[in-house]
Length: 104
Length: 134
Image (cartoon, rainbow over all chains, first blue to last red; front, side, top):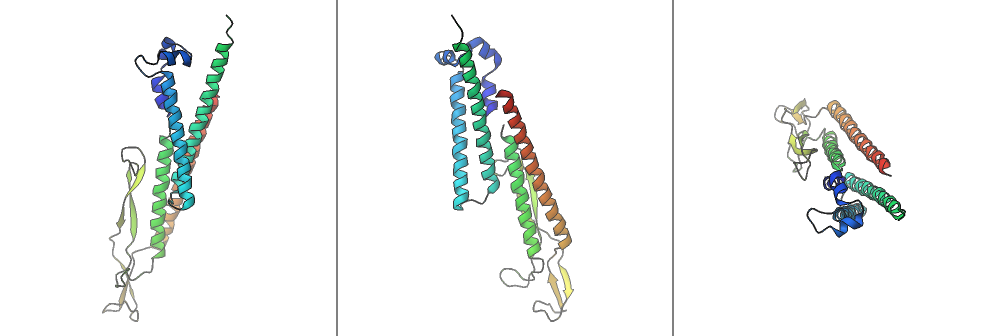
């Protein structure tokens, strides 16, 4: 999941294309996928992992599957993905606060 | 990022299948008849592992390729009064050595624990890298 983000977010591309998400979202139409697209894809991925996990738990509770390891693995994946998303969100908020405090 | 968790899960599933096979062997160690009631004893089964995950053999992991029957000869015991005895009074018993099955069961459970430890360690590594960001 994060590997896909790293592939698209090489440092050179970020330095060249601007730092704020808002700016790259505005220029998102040109060429390769922008930061906003990457972020949206990763959020969709996290959502899909969470749905997989809840469905797996439901199947185990109703007895449709006996694969306990599969259920636990799905839950671990969704947990790690969500914590990663929270950490990225924290970094984005910090970056936004810094930019907001730039005095003209 | 989640490859290692998928690999560990495939290992756990494979060891679980191996444990089920060993349990079947231990339970049927004295079965002199098959399911249809004929005097053919239970043949020992063992699992064949192959690389690749069960659903997608390209990804790294382990899967059970086949559950094979052990072709070694049956044990023969001299019991003339047994209903399954042949003309010489010998009864064929399954080719299962309980001591070997116990050791195999121990191996399977240790392998299961090793897989679980590996998954926990990788989970801790991922959490540690999250601390870097946050």
